[in-house]
Structure formats: structure tokens, C-alpha cells
Image 1 (cartoon, rainbow, N blue to C red):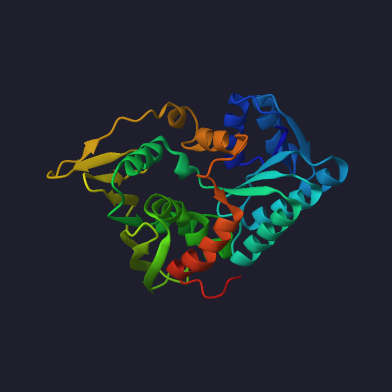
Image 2: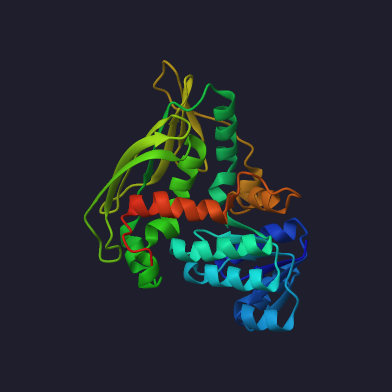
Length: 317
């Protein structure tokens, strides 16, 4: 499937590694040759410069595209490609900085008969694939909890634009939240509390809440960005507790024990490439894309009904 890789930054480079290994016919589309040329030459790919709009005015749209741009440019790039006729798009998370932009992409994709997916690569970690297998083989999820703490000193020093930092939960923390609800079921009931603020994130600094998922499981979450912490998910099954902390690894606590036992996983692809990317692109290029991919409509619904609630994003802009 002819593919354009939109962007030539670090995330695009990670995608290029996998696309090259999978021998996908890929052209890198970027603003300038500064990054595009060395990346294309290293991966034996074609490249086009001048930006997406210029390229679309001169070239026919590709069958597929992977958009790896700064988060505030993602939605517009997707709209341009959909208008030009691209039928399958993998859009880096979170797809947009608000649900209004997500809805525009979703509506246009439906109108054009196209498929747009959000690239939450952690759904495709080897550890998560094994966790999903164990959940499916069990009698069901009883409860789950998750933490999405962030490294505030590091984020404060980033050169990332302020308006992106102000939506940091959506731009970054949803990696954890999406995965937790993907495994344990999306909320049917959700009670969220927030407090505090940070110079770079005025909506909240401390997050906690609980609810019930569509699978009938109780869940709770916690994050305090004012101090140290790390991402993690724990899932309680009748026979064991599954622990994803760090999320590239999977441990189990058997019923009747306090021991955390590491589970052996086939993570060769996660070691060779950026974790999750190889299996995610396999799912994207399948003749029928995997149900484990996040559709643009699912992302729109999650942002409106879950993410904005947890993050205390009052103004969807």
C-alpha cells in the first residue's frame, strides 16, 4: 500500500524504521530537506519537501498516510489528506488538542468513506498483548487502577508550545488512560476530582477518581503532578493481579500470594523497534484493520466524555 509518512522528526523516524523493515512503499513528506533527506537516504525512501499542502497540489494523494507531526498540526494534516482522497490514515496521538477538531476529522472521514486511526502504540506492547490474552482467558476483570503521573520539572523545561502543555493530559497522559480503559472497559460511571495547578498546566495538578466500566469492573485512578511518580496499571482478575509498571513489562501476583512474578513475553519487536510500533503498523496495514486500533470516532467520544472530565478541561478549545 503506497504510503506517505508526514513529518521527519523523531516520531517519524521511529515509524520509518518499521516501514523500512516491512518493505512498505513509503515517501517522506516534510517542510524542508534538513531532516527529510538524511532520513530518506538512511531508509532508502523517496522524499518530497515544501509541506503537505504544496505536495498535494502537485501529487496524487497516497492510498495511506502516517501523520507524525506536532500535536497542534495533526488534525489539519488529516483533513488535507482526506480531502485529497487518502482512504487510510494513522494519526499520531491524540489526533487533535480538542474534540471540535476531532469531530471535523471524523465527519470528513465518514463523508469520504475513509478510515482514520489514532496511534496509541502502547496497546500493541508485547506486555499488553499478553495481558489481553490473560484477561480474555479469565472469568473477567474484577477491578483495575491506574496512575498517570508526569515528570513536571522536565515538562516545564521543554520547548513545547505553551498551548500544548496546557493540554498535556490529552497530549501525553492519555497513553495510560486509553490503555487502562481498553483493558478494563470504558466508563459507564465516572466521578472525577481535581485540585491545584501548575504554571504550565492551569486546569489541574492533582487528579483522582473512580467509577464502573462497561465490563462491570470497578476502577480508580490517581496522579499528582506536583511530585514524582510513574505510569502504571494494575488489573485484578479472579486468579491473579496483572501489573504493568513499567508498561513494557508484565508481572503477575497469584491469588493467595504477595509475590510479583515477572511473565516472560515475546518482546523481540519491542526491543528492535520503538515498543508497540511494529505490531501497530501490522494492525494498520491488515486487510481488515484490527479492532485494537483506536478509531477517530472513538477518540472523539473518549475526549468528550472521559478525557475532558478527568483533566478538568472546561473549554474545549
